[in-house]
Image 1 (cartoon, rainbow, N blue to C red):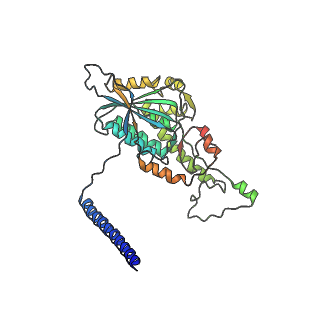
Image 2 (spheres, rainbow, N blue to C red):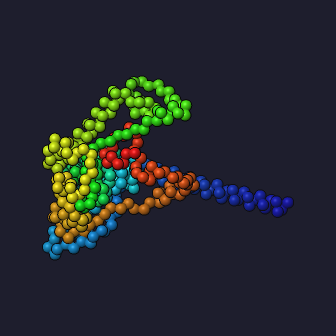
Image 3 (cartoon, helix red, strand yellow):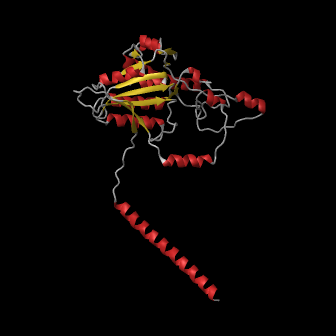
Length: 345
């Protein structure tokens, strides 16, 4: 009896301690919640960390010995669906970096390194406008933007590049491809072979436009073609204005979707010069009045949240072989793209 009684007492004591501990935690939580509700939190814009690419060698009489040139990369397919490191998408990441460089008094100029085949029309236009905002002083002070084209700066990649003050490429760079593309897959005959049929109820004649289960009507073809030509007209207009070219000659010449080399682009005045990326750094320093400035690039800091998400996804890891994705980007039906024709299946 004595042992049973003492055991019960120990259990009651343990229960009491646990209850007391939970009560203290609840009080702390309530107090901290009350304090946080009274505290005004000022939102802080996300910022990238800086990494030195080229050490600065400013002259002794330099106006700002801490002057910097910001190097920003635009790589891969331009798409608002591509996740960003700090922003919601890669488009937001580019905008954050441009704003960070534009509002940093130490940054005297920007080198935008473009290595992209292009991508979505709207995403490309968004980045073009963001670059132009920096170039034209939208943040209070104009800052020169030198664009350097890597292996590929075609279509949407060239569209974005046109916002720069000075465009430079390697002689072997592939650029140009001034045009717009939209695609859809028609599987009507395949459905007929396997005995399948799509039944559609719609509110208007264009509601199931680009459906692969039937042929397009002439009205639909005309409608889609008009959308394509409207976007194309804006593209050609931007190139003609930014590069000071005759728009009509451009339409009947290089703006037919062809891809050209950096050497030919220079001859056609689509770019200002050919050279290496170091030449782009030097030009940025010249335009920014910061000879010998340090070249820095922006990098996203490591965050544990991403690690936890990756660990969470690891439980659902699967192996997928996608030949189409390996050969090139998957173009979604119904979207307008600034992409070279060879990206379409």
